[in-house]
Length: 127
Length: 361
Image (cartoon, one colour):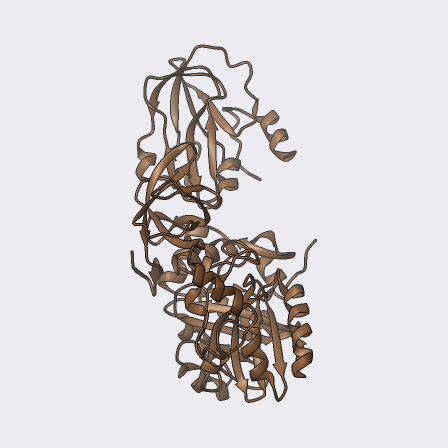
């Protein structure tokens, strides 16, 4: 079974969302997603300070097996990107919830549409 | 549920992720596909390729038969044990399969053909063998383990019986030696040195476990694909099939047009294609930008002609993406590839991309 931390929220498209103290959110992909992708070799991050809508494709992750899109879980402004991943894309495999966060958003909407850990666990078990 | 090789349980014990491959349940990877790739380039890895089919041919006329059946010329096999890579063509010059043929004796040859094509290959071979009174025997009692990498032969050596050890270690590339049970070819599909060992399937698990104990890592189909593409080798069903001739698949070098009086199936079609000289060609590509070339991406050549990537991957050894692409006839130094709505330039190179651990492009 893949790791699904209790303190995070999730999407059906396998992004995780962490709400920070300053009301911004940090986004990455789940352990389940990195496992499906296999060894990750390139990551294309979004530009800083752009407005995105929920479900926009904002990141492309290329693995040895396939290319995967990462969708913005929320509408808002991209306020940070994790540049470390450009040189070390393999961090997404080794540390999907910690070192390999992808981007931070200042959201312009509530988090009501996101999944709770148990809902995400159920979702992945049905895939 | 697909067919399983005799080593299926060994794969499960090594935590293999199993996928369907041409009707066979085969290991895709055991852990990290990238690590498996590097293991073969730097040390030694082993592949269960028992899904491939060994076909033994025998008869007084077997040499004549194969010189008619295959596009490469078995007349080039001058000594017993020598191996040859060849395409088997239909009358239109389309590739029915690619295979390795070994000369076993004056009256015996051994073929190793692809798994997914086994049935149609055997039907085709048997149909033509009749006229030559050649006996065709499918050897589904045998397993095949490929051990590849700079340390591969040294790792295999102590596992061979005394009578086979010396002759196996003295083999030149593309040659084989054998005893009553075990057949060892210095061949492979990775661009590294190594052996392909054909043995009775009941003996395969013990052989596999002994290699594992000697730190030879099991390698899945995922790394097998990146290794073979780096080595500049085609994959049947992906880079060519019956709709394409060897000339359209980068395999012209495997067709023996000489001697000119050797009649082989597909020869007339290939000669007509050569005469016209407007057939598609295969290019080897390296992407300088970030991104990954993958099968079916559109390739645009100078002048606006359109082609397609057949095989594409991230090359773990080079750290860039590499590919084969089939494009309209012409000479090109660079092409444009459409990757997810972006046009990126890819450099045309001469394969192999990597051989014996060294980068050639």
